[in-house]
Each structure stands twice: as structure tokens, then as C-alpha cells.
Length: 148
Length: 429
Image 1 (cartoon, each protein chain N blue to C red):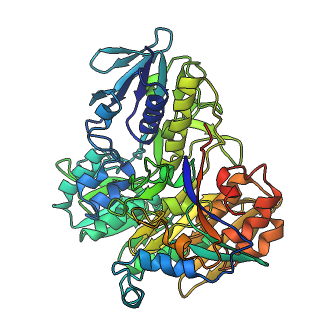
Image 2 (tube, rainbow over the protein chains, first blue to last red):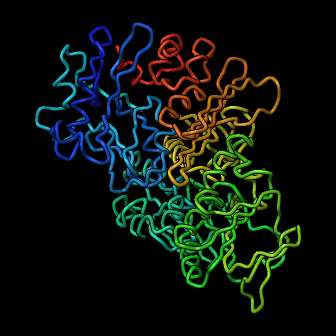
Image 3 (tube, rainbow over the protein chains, first blue to last red):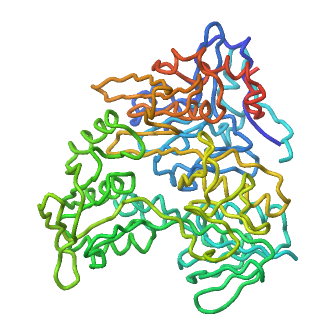
């Protein structure tokens, strides 16, 4: 089973609500008004991107063959038992090897470590971006994994 | 019960062992290493030396790794020879280990230059945990350290030793630092940045003799006859693969151990992966060793699959790539990073104030390499274009744009579905 977030481009308006709620969800205070003063500044793990008239909100795809996991020399990036790709900031040394290989460019720097979408692990209502997307362009998907 | 023997407990060996165990729950797996430490990450040694991380964090797998995967470790013993006919490996203490299928993941070692005085105490590579610990000890007696070599190893070591409060001089034979992975213009940006932080860099100079009485390093003499007084010398002159164990056997070697697209050597039941394995380069197609952690992990995985299931998984080829950060300035390079001839088109964008510098190398419409300094966040997207070898002519303008991101390559993804076949590309609908 593979768990990830799917984006429907026809519904995405590029309103960046996902970016905002993601940054707040992953801040220390989890409160927008306070989070803006945190150092280092909270970083969204999703990014609204454009080409011509197409808009997408992109984040970690939790790849089956996760290149970031293979590239990570400190074993901070790993495959969790649920198939998601997770990152242990305690182990991260900020070498940027994961950034070097991520085909979607969705791993970000925050201070001395990298951060990425963790699918809001442990959050009762699932990923904050999916919950807050005004047009329901984002949804959590569970797919049967290819047998490799 | 099949017997798998893996020589080497670093990136390639570990990833192969994990795959083998996943695919075959009952097989006997034996891992042999001449190092007597738990599984650790060599690439972190410079961080450890800099005191950026404690020794504990060098671990790449926890101490129970061997137990958890039911692996028999044979540590602190060097394999001196393999005998493919008898299917045994010989250890230095005279003992033998039998195998059905063997993986050679012996890696590479620091190349120590053939320079008079190199045997004096105080000259080290930075390749093993033992090197790092010896350097640590020597640092107590060190006022000035000299790095021989201006490549990644030399500069990472220079950063570490500088952080420890030691005066550092980097002696570089080439006209500029990082000469293996970039040309002079980007290298000068990095060089300027590092110099401003207090690391001295002397280019166009080779060391000719290591000086010192009582077998201890006291200085190094350069080819212009100047002498730098120093107590510590770290040699960063690249690595050479550990292939001696297959000397005079049927296992074919070139510079390293030659493998095919299945990571299989010239002997059917012997595979090789990691820094010792010479495989086809993804861009040139030529036999190459790109001695890098990510390549070693992926090679180990693929070798592991093929060792258990027969040759079922193909390796795309090895790709040169590097990521490094010096005093807050990130640098990522990938593929071809020098304009070798006129058939290669070069695109550059820069902002000297930040500094940000990006250089792209295009051949026949295909991105074959790049150098990014200062802003590296989209490196992986560029990297995917190199790996997929698609015609980027349509999006050439946006390559150098500071707004470049994955969305900009969507037209290429949609037009080349056979190349962007991974399921993740279908998650944007």
C-alpha cells in the first residue's frame, strides 16, 4: 500500500492555503500569529507551482523507490512501516544529498537541517493541507504498491 | 540454505544485505569487514572531526543491525584473496569462508601520494573512523594543518580542522579548487567564500617533501621551495578501489572491478557494488567509478536483488554528483560540469552579491550536467532531467530562471511518459 497526496490540477486555484497551513502545522507554536515570529521561520513543505495556465500544489510523493532515502548518508531519511518516506531531523546533518536527487524538488532547508512533507504523521484529521484545501484539489490516496 | 557472503559493511554492503534478507528469509548471510566498528557512515567523518556531531551519530545502522537481520558478522578481519573455483574467500588470519554467491563491496581507500616523508606520523587520509580518531589525537599537538588537495575531501577536512581552531592551509596542484568537478568561474566563487572564512588556499603548487625529525611531521616543502611549518597533514587526493583480493583470479578488473548492468562481475556468482565497482557511466556509457554514497546504496540494492532472484534488475548506470556545503554556501554538481568541446552548449546565470551561480551543460538538446552554487533547492529536478535524457529545448529558457521548479518540466513529463514511468508522476492529475 502506498500513501500519498494527489493533486487535481483542474481544481487547484493556487490560493496557497496549503502552504500556509503546512507551515503553521509544522511550527513550534502551531499558531499562525505566533509562528511568524519563530526562528528559524516555519517552512511550508508544499509549494504552489505554475506553468502557463496549469497550477499545482506539490509536496513529497513518498516515492516507492525513494531516491532521497538511498542518497541519505546519515540515515535520517527512511521508509516507515506504512510505506511513507519520513525524516528524522535529529539525525540530519544538512548535507543536501536528498535535495540533490529529489525529482520533484520538494525537500526544503530549514536552518541546519532539511524538512519535507510527513503527511502530518499523528494528526488526527490527516494532513492539514488536505483538510483545509478550499476546492478539495488535494486528497490522500492509498494505492496498491507495484510488486518490484 | 543458500550462503551469501558480502565483503564490506558500508553503503553497498549494507543495502545489499537488507535486500537479500528481505527476499530470502532463511539464507545464511555473512558480512566481512577489516574494520572493527558497527556500521557507520564515512561521509560523516568530517562532521565528526569538526565536532558538529558526536561519535554516536556516525552510526548508519543501530548496533543490532546484524542481529535484526540474522547476519553473521566477521569484523576486524581483512579478506586477502578470493578463490572463485573453490567458492571460498581467504582471510588474513588463514581462515576460509565458503559462499554460493559473493558480493565484493570492499570500497576504496585514500590515495596517499608518493611523496618523500609520507610515512611520518601526522600524515593521514580521512576515510575511516580510525583516521578520524588519529587526526583527533594529533590535533592536540597541532597549530597548523596542511591539506594536500583542493577537492571535496581536502576542503571538508579543511573546514573541520578550521572549526577546531587550527590554522589551515590548503595546497592545491591545480589552478583552482574543486578542479575535478567544476571549471574556474564557479570554483573561484567557492574559493573566495572559503578564504573569507579564514582558510588559506595556495593554488598551482605541489608538495614535494614532508619534513620532520623523529618521524613526526614538522612541515611540508612545496615545489617553489617554500616550507609551511605544520604538525598535521591530511591528504585528499582521491581514492583508489580495493581490488587486490581478486588479483590473479578470473574476476575481470580495469581500474576497479568491472561489472555489467546487473552489477555482476565476469564470474557468474560474484557481484560487485559501490566504490570498488566499475560500471557504465549514465552519460558517457564508458566504464567509470563514481565513488559516491548514493550510487553505492543503489548498486548494493540492485546487486542484492540479482544475487537472489537471478539477473532481473538492471542498473541505469552510474552518475557523477556531489553535494557539499562550506560555511553556509551550498554547492551541488551533477553529470558533465565542464565544457569539453564546442558541441556542448553552456547556459549561465549568476548574482554575485548573494552569491548565486548556476551553470548548465546541454548536448544535442539534452541536459547532461550542471553546477549550482548558493541556491540548490531544485537540484533534484535538474538531476531528473539528466537521468531521463529528454530533449529540454522547449523549456530551455526556464532552466536558468530563478522560478524554476517541477511544474516547469511538466510539459516534458507529459510528452515523455515512457521515460517518466514512475507511479509518482501520475499523482498530478
